[in-house]
Amino acid sequence: MGDWLFLIIGIAVVGVLTLAGLLTSGRRRKGELPQGGTDVIVPTPTEGEVATDAPPEPAVAVEPDVAATPTLEKPEGTASRLVRLRQRLSRSQGGLGQGLLALLSRDRLDEDTWEAIEDTLLTADIGVAPTQSLVDKLRTRLRVEGGQTHDTRAVLREELIELVGTDMDRRLQVTGSDGKPGVVLVVGVNGAGKTTTVGKIARILVAEDLTVTLGAADTFRAAAVDQLATWGDRVGVAVVRGPEGSDPASVAFEAVKQGVDQGIDTVLVDTAGRLQNKAGLMDELSKVKRVIEKIAPVTEVLLVLDATTGQNGLIQARVFSEIVDVTGIVLTKLDGSAKGGIVVQVQRELGVPVKLVGLGEGPDDMAPFDAAAFVDALLG
Image (spheres, rainbow, N blue to C red):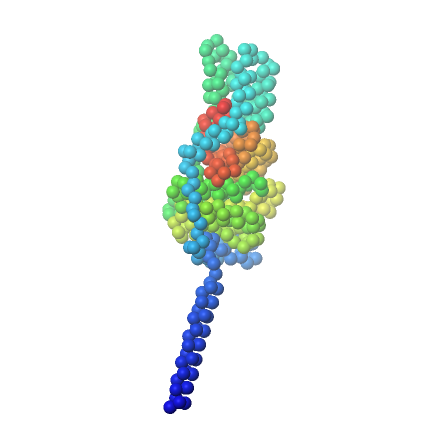
């Protein structure tokens, strides 16, 4: 009887130890599960894929970590952006308008005065041809209306608005057709604020209740990918990214494919900063556009220009326009310069409108461009 008792006790002990081991193993496996994120990871393409325009293989999605989801921000609406940014622009650009008004309000508009007016306009980067055209119109109007009661400010305002342009379609084409998303390709040289611009546009679209996906196709600069992911996280927008140095066209394609599959309204694709004298990189940018259009048309190509670069910005604009058919301009850093005339010059150079302006470092310091509001800000 004693032997049987010892045998039963031994079996019970072994059973308890086995059960404890199974529970410990289960807890260890649960702790080893990968932590998720909001990104979609695009596999590195093979050399053959990089060399061709063939669509890449599907990406592998990482499940989101619900517990780590940050509190989403509510972006500012367009109306309040326009009011605030008009005030900022007025403070930074008012010197140009006030200088012109002071010259035009002189009792006698002699040749020295008109020459000073021309110099003021040229200094503001309006350009030689637009400056001469504006001065000729002002001279004619003020001479003809000189014997009548006239408002010099009103005359200047009307002519500046016409110069900036009221007949251009400045709407952003951010939605597609036939169930496909709008695809916005954002291009520009390093340092113009391109990645930041993509993030700010995403906020504008989210404020308008549009669904957005971001494509981090600037794969050669890890900081750009991380920066874009941060912008996306703040407003709950998914980011498609690939390993550092991977094919930008693969990332762009996958972002648009996800947009199509998920019924997203707009896909914003950030591209690497291109030096306009690097033919290979420009060819690569052209390839990105071709690959995207295998799945959905590109509805907008926005060229981001630093408003402080002046003539160099025009050279960049010209080259990009030849490669990817630019449809709109985004002017950044307009608040820190009195050279607002770059708006006039770049539009004349490309024949495409300025659609957005950035006037500060804040996340919502970007707004649609409005010719009348811009001129009013110039005049203070």
